[in-house]
Image (cartoon, rainbow, N blue to C red; front, side):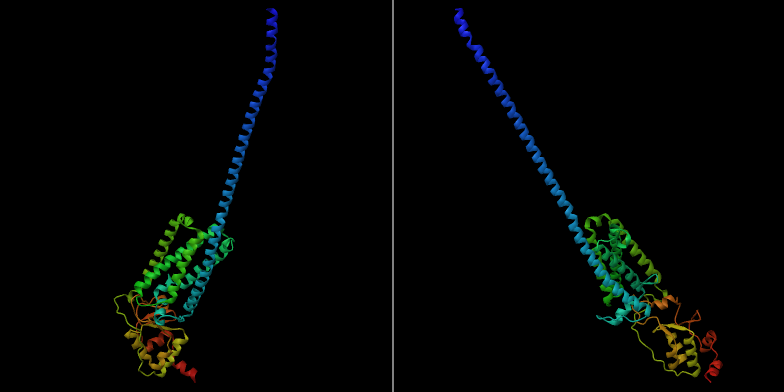
Length: 373
């Protein structure tokens, strides 16, 4: 029995010693597989995260490129501002030249009289400053800002962002003023036509739209409050200017009349001719109106030949109509009635006898005759 048990028991230790290494090998292989799978998962996560980072970078790059595209569109709008501003500058420069030289404007379309009637009305100046001169400065500023913003340079040395805001504010004020004058044209000058006025309105609104496109609608919305303040300031300024410039003696109670001339029928004496020459030589002026009977009587005193020698200023050269007031020269003289003489800086209202005018101007007929000899 003992031998059998010994023989029978001897194989078990041997089998056990062989089985243990195989189990440890299988366990180690499982652990290795698990580690490999973990590593593969980590690599997959790293690859996915790197792809996500790459996609994010690509999206960020595409986002960076978008403002450049909009900027190009904006500068294209600023080029339009430069071109339109240049056209407006030329137009207002021409009108300013006419204003300072007291010349008549050439009106290629419509009635030339109605064109001059509007351009020489009391609405052609703001607090005594010619409206064309104000427009010339505004168009010039817009043209300069448009050129420099179009070239991506610092406009007027104030920086690009501030330059865009200045451009928007300037075009906003121009558009507000144009809307105001468009209302004046439709209410005060019915039946009249002024191509220069309508061209300026079109240019102003076009510049306003171009500046909005250049700055962008989102940026414009941020400054709506400032734009509304500019509009209110422009309208109130114009209202105050024109309410103060309307003379009392040319109210709407007077009937409308077309301009006409009255023939001087009396003959001029040598004294009247010499006095008229003297008055003109010292810079004396006579202000009157075509419908004024006292003005005609004053001219009849001088006679036909002498009246032509006087420095006479017609205050209503385009007739008397609704919305039409005295020309600037008469408003600046602060007339109280017609006729009015300005002799050596002294303002004299009413008709004057020739002897009075001679005494007031220092005219001596004897000296004139002596010098003539």
